[in-house]
Image (cartoon, rainbow over all chains, first blue to last red; front, side, top):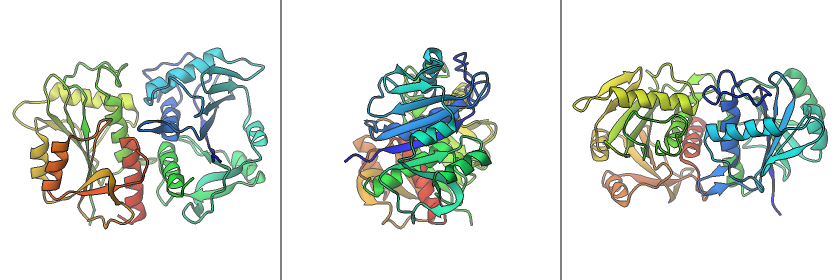
Length: 197
Length: 197
């Protein structure tokens, strides 16, 4: 049985396809951060992790929230560099419909969806919130339906954390340092590999 | 006493400042890979790791080898995104002198240097070669003068590995998967943090 690894990273990236690819960290709202998180979630040296599903909700102006999901089993054509990943997010924003989810390119799904809707739709999974004050990932028994939640360069809002706790989320820590979100994902993936997931 | 962490990643990037920033993975010779390795080596969410020294030798045409060293204690102005890191490598290539090492921007040093010269100059350190067939990093007693060696998207050449072994390098493995070089660096940094380095 395949154990799917789900990751959610909140994004403050802008929600218009008018993205300046030369300025991902600035005017695009730290789209570079999300791009690196996607790289961290999926890539191995010989290809894509098929057992990963990556979720983000873009919260930037002018049209938030935009929910994007990437499924490793179906993901095609994307390269691991920031610029290329950003191009695929741009395509998702260009092709998005207001009233239904569409697959903008192979393995990338886009729709209007709130954080609460996302949690509700995934409540069959076990939620883990990355939190420096949580229990060490080395001591936590990770379930076979894990879903990890992270902020981008900003932490999740208190209300989002409370909502996660309402859905039974467990706070887990990967150490005393405050790591980049993309590095957290690399470490979690490695830890799960090591545990034989 | 600060324990410095040295990393070397071989690069196949081109050795002219005529870099197309829109095409780091292609015409620039996978400069995106080195940029992500630099991100992985230095960045924490609140700043730069001052205890890291990152080395690379660019082996691409037209003027190899070009040796670049980045010192965390002195590194300034660089942002963690691929494009920005590539801009600083471009500046190093623009300002390089054929006959002596210069500091092209704060904390970035560039010169003409071969891999063998690099090893000779650093022979007081303990060399670890990332190798899937090496001993698990979990079992290796890492010294207080560690220097880790990795390939980029290509493995090191056999002659380079033999030279490393001549200098006493120990092969270490971080698991059965073949990880991206940048992910290897994230994992090594995390492992050293965890061990209290």
